[in-house]
Image (cartoon, rainbow, N blue to C red; front, top):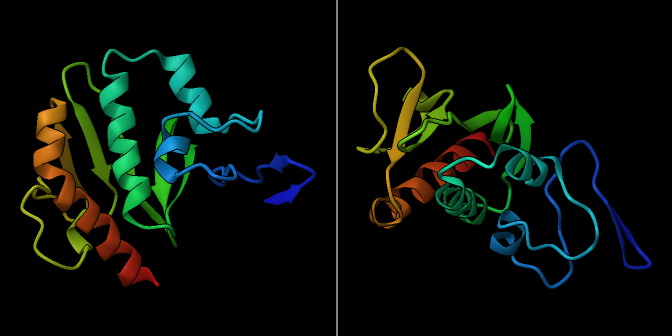
Length: 149
């Protein structure tokens, strides 16, 4: 990314870094430098019924570790650091997160569900459920980043 004369250029889907904006503000689409990244555009285009909850989940993921980048892969927001960590798997009644290699993430993470060889999911039906699971979601993201650093 290149900063100069108050202009921000975003390269290859890297997250925006608006001057004076927190990662949570960026994840909520509140960056004021005229650029809209591909994930912001996805939210604008989708108009998903759980848009606000999805944006809250996005903020938790981005705020968990500054090394996390976001992009659109498989037609959905995907978060990565030295590999794909997690993607939204949009559903109608809950926010579903697909952890691509969730079974390998170090540590004990009881909210990660599934018994497949690699993938795990985590789901949130409401802001209250997200609040209850916020610390664990952030811990999973940090565990991945620390593992892959």
